Length: 308
Ligand SMILES: NC(=O)c1ccc[n+]([C@@H]2O[C@H](COP(=O)([O-])OP(=O)(O)OC[C@H]3O[C@@H](n4cnc5c(N)ncnc54)[C@H](OP(=O)(O)O)[C@@H]3O)[C@@H](O)[C@H]2O)c1
Image (cartoon, rainbow, N blue to C red; front, side, top):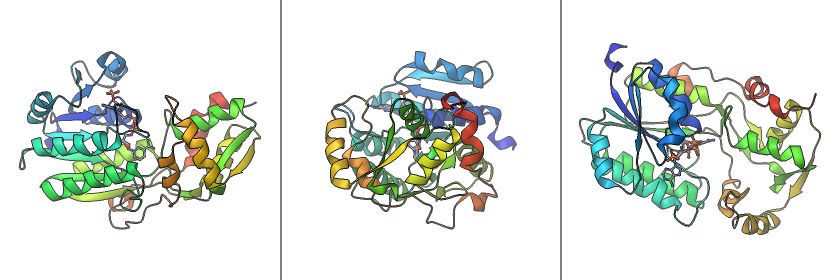
């Protein structure tokens, strides 16, 4: 696909879990990649993913409008992967998920830049959660104001550096119990990080625009089943303990005080709805991608937690 060769792409949030995989795919497809980050030194691990000079880390604060404008002006494609799972004093959901995206959109030249926003599965359904509402408001703003955009809504993403399976695997090392919030009935459709990247690259190659894609894996599991698969994978027996909603909220009120909370009230609201693909038009199937199953990949990267 020669028309992609040497296109300039700026990836906000490129130092994160999805970012590190996507940047490898972008480099393999001959893009020139800029990664604005709060801390370029922490992003040096990205450099070997591309050829010399192919990846450029740039110190950037999301409040710096002038730099934002210049970065966008100098890009053919802008990808936003910046997201947070819980709020901190200086980072609230609307500031990170909505205001920043709105400022990207306002700086985009309508016929020049192509904007790809990574949102999340179900944001259009869970408006009672601030995480979802802030992301959904951003998605609506993009749809309303841009001519060349793409919105990707992935389900729970799994892969070597994921937050979900690594966190519960770590917890199982020191705790005899694992929590099943509201019985662990909420359904998820975990998607492999490499499949999300393949999807984005395929969309770029096929020159698809102005669509909302939902990316989910081949199987749907309840939260309880996910923990059972995890425990089986690492060969550990733990008690799965039922936590009623009211107790979970009390626990979250305590955890929220901590710097890296295990659970927040907003996350409990997310568990009120299943997190599965509902839009059947624009999915992996549309792109002829067969997503990989969780059970095939999990044993590869959870080896270090396995009891032999
Ligand atoms: N992981 C999942 O299961 C999942 C599922 C559905 C949707 N998503 C969405 O997919 C996107 C990527 O997810 P991810 O798991 O790769 O996220 P991640 O690992 O948490 O990384 C996100 C990046 O956001 C940047 N960031 C975080 N807080 C920031 C702040 N206050 N100011 C500026 N930058 C900030 C960080 O970049 P620097 O530290 O370099 O500045 C970080 O590298 C997110 O929008 C997320 O909501 C993820």
